Length: 350
Ligand code: MRU
Image (cartoon, rainbow, N blue to C red; front, side, top):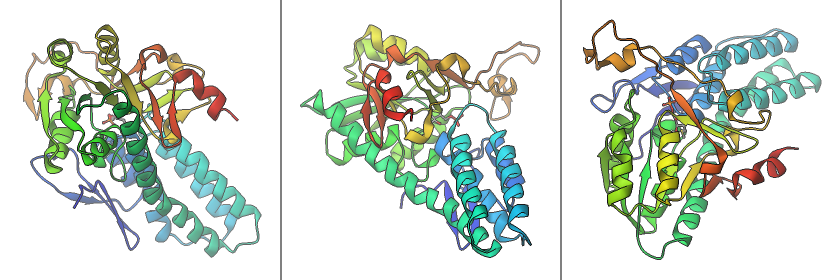
């Protein structure tokens, strides 16, 4: 059975508490929008697609328990709660895109002749459908990314990935990790290297665990070993996810992505961003406009509660960085195709 970060069953929502992995697998009930906001903000669930799905499902869960007497009251409640969910984490655009989409459905329902009960049921259904749709997109990304990478190599490939982009970061299968999964399914994967991803250790705690769980041949490296790895071993491609891709192709992703892209360019290793189109922010011109979340300094000064730096040490802890479009040399793999960064604007700006 694949790892499941999000369980939605008979109107109940549970998330796998990712702060406890890999030592403990414990599911937490999410019963309200406030619960949804908290588990996203505290990173008990994380990864751009999973954030949007849990945000919307927390709204669906609360909606199941809340009677509304009028459609306008329901419409206002949905609007206010979506705005609130968007504030849980600022960098990934997926929650904002999902909110806009759900708001469109809500506004259409408010203006048609459905009853308040129909409106409530259809909003819940819209949120439920996100789970299936996300897995479908990820599988397409997996196949298209595998095609692109195997097109440049007739031999089994070695790839490097960063952070966690697998089942734990999505509704299932994964984006960059989905590409790795698809290459492995074709028996064309020699080996995966995954970075530990300081300071939150998504690579060590989640990706290495997920790869082991799936019996995919993998080796964990520290973040500062990536250049030496590319210099001493043949790495055929780097695959990473995205939290927000702007219209010129600049991409915000987990801190450390940018330095991998710089080193990849030096070593002529193709660099791929793998993300659903729900991670594209066509409203923003370029990466400088992306809000970058800064996280507590304790995440750097402690590991699992054990101090590793003097308490008075001053830190800088941005959770994401922006990789400029020109360093995304392989392409941006979406469910709709693999694009060069400069192709995004004409393809997705309507
Ligand atoms: O801080 P996180 O763990 O939410 O950051 C996750 C990433 O940066 C992922 O690469 C990105 O969200 C894509 S997940 C499919």
